Amino acid sequence: MPAARQQLILVTGLSGGGKSTALRALEDLGCYCVDNLPAALLPEFAEQIKRNPARYSKVALGVDARSPGRDLEEIPLWLDQLSKAGLECQLLFLTADIKAIIKRFSETRRRHPLTTDEHALPEAIEREKRLLAGLQKKADWVIDTSDTNIHQLRRQVWKCAGNENDTMTIVLESFAFKRGVPQDVDFIFDARILPNPHWVEELREYSGLDLPVRKWLEQDEAVEGMLNDILGFLRSWLPKFQLSQRSYVTVGIGCTGGRHRSVYLVDRLSAGLSPDFGHILIHHRELQA
Image 1 (cartoon, helix red, strand yellow):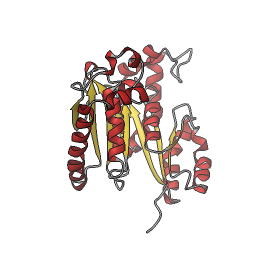
Image 2: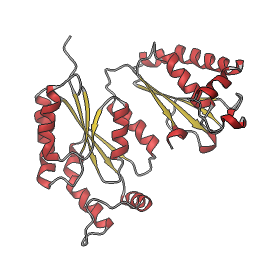
Image 3: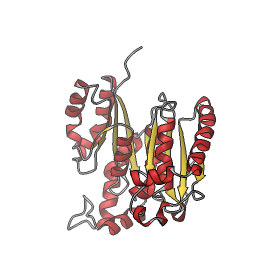
Image 4: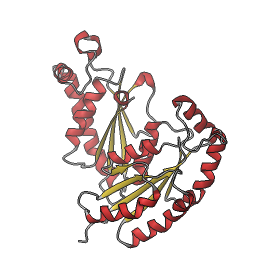
C-alpha cells in the first residue's frame, strides 16, 4: 500500500474573518500549525516539511494580506508545484461581510493590519478584499463567518479539512443549557436529572475533569446508569452512520452550568468510545469560553 501523502492546508482570508480560530481547529485535527508565514517563504518551508514526513504529515499555514502583492499572486502556482511534488495541498479562505469585521475590530480594539494614516478601517477592509480576491477564487473551501461564532466555525473547519478516507470523526461537546443548545449537533443528551456538584460548596470551583468531582459523581448509581445507556445507544448507532459514509457526527451533553456533569460524561464517553471509534474530538464549550 502506498504511503499517505503529506497534507498542507494554507489558511488565508480577511483579517477578522477567523483565521486564528481556523488554525486552532486544524491543530485539533493533528496539524502542525504556523501562523503569519510570509508568502515568499512558502517554497522554502515546504522543502523543510518534505524532508521530515513523519513529523509533518499534516501542516496548516496561515498567510495574510501583509505579504507583498506579487507573493500573494504566486501562491496558487506554488501550491500547484507542491502538489506535483507529492504534497496534498488545499486552500482554505475565511471571509465575512464588512459590518461583521468592523464590529469585531471594534470589540477587540485591535488595529487592522492594512490601516494607515490614509486608510481608515472600512477602506483597509476593501483594499484587503481586492488583494485577496484572486486567492478566494482559487480556494478549495470558502467559509463565510459573518453570522458564525467560534464554536460553529471550528466545526465547519473540521468538516472541510477532515480526510474523507479517515475514520468517521466524532465530536463530543459539553455545554450549558442556560447558554443555549449548540447548533449542528446530531444527538443531544440531558444530564440535568443527575445530582449537581454545584450545590456542594467545596466542589463548586472544580470541573468535571477534576478528581473530587469525579469521585462525588461516581457515588451515585444514576450517573453510571446514564453513562452506560448513552454508550450503548452510541455503540449501536454510530456504526450505521459510518456505513452510510457519514464523516462527521456531533454528540452534545448538556447540564445546567456546563462545568460538572456534562464535562464528566463527555470525558467518560470519550474513553468508552475510543477503542471502537479512533477519531474523537472533545470540546468543553463552557470551560473554553
